[in-house]
Length: 571
Ligand code: ADP
Image (cartoon, rainbow, N blue to C red):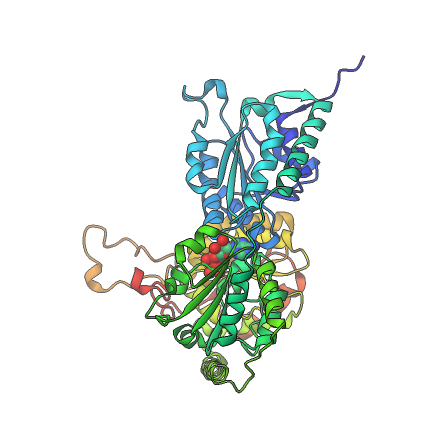
């Protein structure tokens, strides 16, 4: 008689992930999770094998933002788990859903110096909404569903699931595996159905609508939480029907197109400095928004905060706080306004002031952008890249951006007309996110081209992943702004070049004119070296058309950028 079929821990984890709806997983294999990766792939979860867990973690984080479902990160035990903390913490800091799954050492040998031994629950806890360990194979399905659910509920964030190697190697009969997965799915569905929805806040909705109606200088601030919530239709409707100007945060860009006439991006200081009522949707009043305080904001501004996280609202103590999903709340505000509609109109003094200021600033910027400066400053190549991206039309490419000057200047020049098409260093100002983000974007949104605009320093953190791009043949074009180092290489004054190590290169400098494009060529991808507008235009046109992995090494004048970009005061 044939032996009854059995399922081991690796296969059960893979099947539970697939049953819970996972479609992609990012990670690095090795002891004890190699089988988990291939079992998950066999169950339908595409495994993207990286060269480094840090990049795989950033990929999983971005995937969570782009899809609204947890990005999966798989790591080996001990050091692999430690490398994975980068992605786990980055996801939590940005309020993006992620589930990190790590193998860990054999439970029987823990505490005796086992191979890659680490208390991984203790290590991940500070960065995770939930950190759980399967101590026996039967735990796996329930914990998979529980952790995936925790990652997306309330404020999204990172969760952690630990599966010791002995548990991965345990086996159960096939019928028991099927039952365990079915029971875990049913329990997850029950708990979702009984999740308390936020309390009815009709009076807050009415108050918000009334405040906006009576405001003299209202503003809508759009954060990446609104992008995550897919609130674009509701927010566009609000802006269009009321005529209230809007200001996106960097990753809130595109929820309402940057090209919309009520965009206050080019009049940011005026908009936040003078607005009297600000409806802030899915954005924290943290450093990125100057804590909502003077001198950047008026001291009398009344904030209406919409956030899925109650603690966030308690922390900021706004004039009106509305706990809930951005899309649903803005739809309710729209409905409330519809009963007694108002629209500021183009000739409203506030709208006129914002649009005039924005127009003046855009004209000034365009005058700078129009010049072809060679050797390249930041503006000339960014204009050429902007125009090439805009020429792609819809679906718009996803732009990945990092680096001090490259990201700062890029934010002002590059245009986002569709939601969730910008990925950058985010809440933590994390450098090194670049290629991980690119890979996530390419698999999450296969119909879009991915264009990374990277400083040479930012690129260096994850550059080995160009091999991953080639291996999976992803449509990613990486443009490296090569200015010989951090902020532009060696900028020391003579009094800093002293002491026993004075002949060492400056801490900010890299090998001048490094051949980054050749790294891509080494793996069979396409590399370009560009120093002039015509060379850049031709490289962009060829690589965008090819939709294959490419690196464009764009040589920038090392004296063009500012130290610390726009954040000198913090350095
Ligand atoms: P930004 O960097 O764009 O300013 P933040 O990351 O600071 O944005 O803020 C995003 C906010 O969005 C977080 O406070 C988070 O709790 C909130 N958020 C996440 N998901 C939703 C949602 N579905 N609806 C409303 N708010 C959300």
